[in-house]
Length: 250
Image (cartoon, rainbow, N blue to C red; front, top):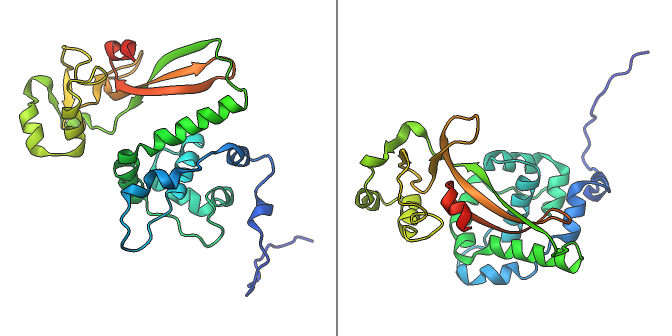
């Protein structure tokens, strides 16, 4: 006899989120060692003592961790996944009824309080310190290399380098342009090389027009990782323009 599946309507449910996250789930392992103590104290000076309570900064950090380890690059999709996935809700301490922040909130935090307080660097260094305490770092062999990270810049809206003007960029006043102009003397960005790229992105002039082997050119940054070779742990990271001089300097 063929059975049929149905979901009878119930007024009350006995549901424990803890029981629905497998014991060997990756996020359980991460949660054991994620050290974000002192994070609220780090960002407290950047909040007003008036007004309604903000979104918990720990929730934002935990969601960003999920996006990183699960390869979810879109903040909009990350919010959708956290809303639907029970393990993600457990990791973020949301329970079944907790509200997931709007995707635009992430940009405001990353370019606001997190950037001003250097909070993400604080979380990173706390994680490295925990790895040291757990004897996961040998300190005997290190490797360093750069990876290209595509920038959110459109080729069709770029300018030939000969037509780009710093004074015009200052008048435009976009955040990315202001930050680039502030780093013109920085060895990792504006002063990395006297040579000009073929194209400059209007929306993000610090992004370098470059190409990897067997790929079309695109706007990108370089992330330079210092890795302890014993357990492939990232000990430090520095972002630079995607050119050889900046990579060697880092």
